[in-house]
Image 1 (cartoon, rainbow, N blue to C red):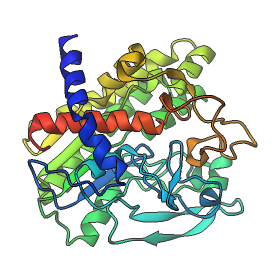
Image 2 (spheres, helix red, strand yellow; image 1 turned 45 degrees about the vertical axis):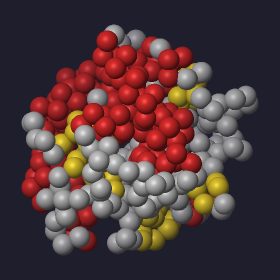
Image 3 (cartoon, one colour; image 1 turned 90 degrees about the vertical axis):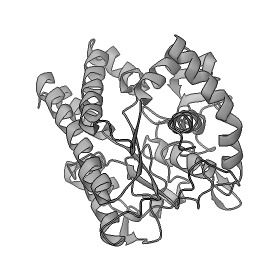
Length: 362
């Protein structure tokens, strides 16, 4: 309890800082202890700032895995990486690679690379395996959507290849991944393609691999400020509660998979002073237990109407003001079954900022 009070105090003290940076769309005049040169991000849909904001998804008013909105004709910063980038007074993030290779009309858009953009996170991306949720190789509706799902290891390699195979040492690098590995493994269990034990072992391997990539691809190539955010508590998401209702024991299994991943990730990172390990799992679990403490009004339902035809994909990727549920959803935690609302993203940005401040980086 004392630790939670300390965290809350840090969050409150940093709220104005985060809000100021976000309100300007990333052009704040904030002074930080360390003057970073740029922001680089690696990960999955939780950090994706528009990899699939093309074709039909753009026409449907989507592009980010949350409640999408526009300000002055441009997407409103709503992802936690965008929000914290604004806090740091850095140039707004943009997706380094965009495109879709689906078979449905409007979902086949040629891949484009942007060397001036440093947000590599992509929806569906896994740590190592290139085939994540939404990838054509999974067949069915995945083939219609065609997400690129470039894995984190390749995201890091792509950045190095386009930046002289090294970091300058002045960037702040954010890493958050593993959720799609958990989703793929749990789906395999549900379809009797894997045993729970095998899935947990696979998650341990993925956590260890991510730690290895941070050490060998980031730190070994000159990165000095790496923020690694562990997996939030997927068991308490709407996905987790629905799975529990369908098959009792599912939430405990999902939590075991996630905590196993996190444990291997943390231990594999070691004690480098160049790495900040952020425990999003504990804070996300506490948000569900004590929502009012964080200003949350709902931590069980989805803010987005995920049913067809209101939502063509059943995902927050195409969620906006036109297909949210009725009522005030401004302080809901979840946009869809796993992704946070803009407010949920803000809570994560505040928490990461508080940990950076404690580290002496902010």
